[in-house]
Image 1 (cartoon, helix red, strand yellow):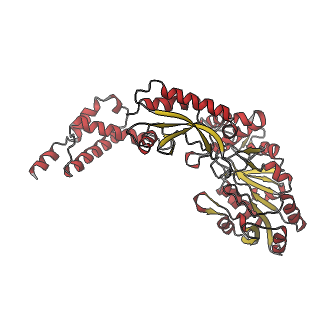
Image 2 (tube, one colour; image 1 turned 180 degrees about the horizontal axis):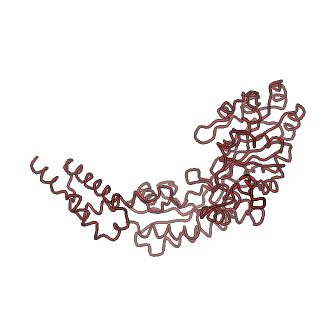
Image 3 (spheres, one colour; image 1 turned 90 degrees about the vertical axis):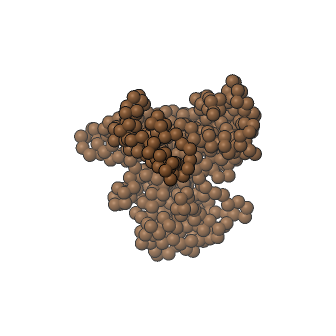
Length: 461
């Protein structure tokens, strides 16, 4: 016990540690109270280790180094940039759609000061935040009007709350979708105050099923695009135009939740995604879709369709609770400008990554392979390999995007250990593991990313 007490007494006092820290240039930039707090944590850490019998360095220099690391962790942003080497374009855990240059510039400009978020410079009076994107959305979708909220689940909730509260909504059993986080269409319907009426079977729903379910308390027909799964085999659903005609025959609105939603015709990896323009042209009165998936903007839920229905939503009290914020709105406006003014398949990163030619991916993989093999003192083994990538983000679930990557291994180091080291860098590199090899899928990698990956491997301890 005496020896333990002697060890504990060897831990320097905070005043002594402060004196040592004062000559450290890296410590001088932090507030004094924060430095003291981290020094105390460092002392506590050493004290606990000594009590457990561990052999630890209790010198002032060692404790100040621990405190410096604590300061670095405490002041480093938790939300940080990562390098996505998984090949998953719309990686939900990694923030889904990366923004285009025009969208980034738009967000940066709005972040720097005040903006015309709800101010009309022509009249000098209060304006509408929704007016900043409604014109472009009408132009790009062919809708009479459009409204934007904070995500697509909120968009569906608003539509149903405004148009169907206290009444019935008809949905096919094969479309009772669950999205990420266990949010389900029946739950959204219940929350809106509408009553779900299921029709058809899981694999087959006929037009007559909808017609037989229509009654005096029916408020709408809701079609839900199965954007995050596919039912194949012995299946059928009514044609969209037929479903719209049936709804209109009974003076009912027909609504479609497109989920991922795309403004452009999109056929990749053996799957075709219905465009918003196509669905509205078939006669759907309201279509909802996400902003941060195939559209390629920030998080948002877009409602496009008939003005008479959107006018009701604009007056609904729920709208204020789910309205889009200024930064997401700036990202959306910048992205829509790419569609109106630019070349979206080139300038919107999501579309560019989904449609990049295989030959270009092969060239990119070859470049990474060559960079890894330059100055390869560590002895990494690497090979260019063909890959299939998923689109991700609850979009194009049946699509297999053919491409290339680089498979890397290091003798004596497991793939899991190598993956962990890459993931825990200051700028994390997120990879795949296949057959005990780390895989760098190059689909989502920029030229800068290729250089950083090679440098990370060459300098790995």
